Length: 356
Figure (cartoon, rainbow, N blue to C red):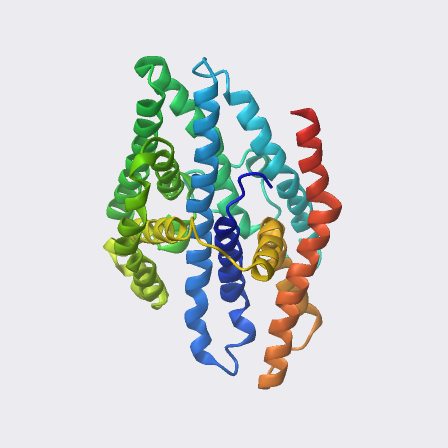
């Protein structure tokens, strides 16, 4: 692929592996109770996805703004390309999860209109149905709102660089401010009450957009980027330590419920920047590229795979049974993701290129 940066595929592969580490820990905890600390993987993997998405989509948005002479003229093409990338898989798994209501994932019937408009967790808690969809809703709100805000600032500022920067900062400050208000006024839980609410989480994606802005407009300072990233990288480790703590501590801490997301975003941003010029051995790169390619489908299919294993197989008790079920979970997740990508997702990506 032209202009492909192998490190970004490595980050995407790391993100999905962190998610699987977290979701699959239940297979290991019967014999390895300390594996419960792997719960940090679900948090950090999604945060890395958010920052990476903000960086990649921010870069695309900057190119489109620079190539367009109209404040809003570039937006329909941007939206169409984004929706061709994300909506087909989302609709497929929306249907799959609806079918699972009658078998291995019984829940109350959802309000499908909210799911079809990605508003199921806009400013309120995500419903129990299709719970992994919360992060996709955050992404779609990002795709929808950010171009409109950028276009609005372009109308008044007439300068691409300033409009994009101010837009990203405005949305980032809004999300942090809204999160602070919700935490201080309502005492919500860390996960359902803060982490999974779309309007409170856009700052993670804006961190990625700001990295894209720096690379686009401050390119003459690129030699200094790794130095700054090295200073910020410890935020990654701090996030792991904090999020590994028991949920009761996370639910009680005002600081954690407001600012751990920004600490995580900074750590993820540093990780992305540090490896931008890294050389990855060809054999490893091929593996990472495939995992990255399947990561979107793997994210959507991993919990149905997990539920199916728990439904059809007895609960593991021995170390061997736990290990085998964990390996089965990981293997089936990637195999099903491979099939979905090749037989479904890839076709929509090809259709997008033909149409656009």
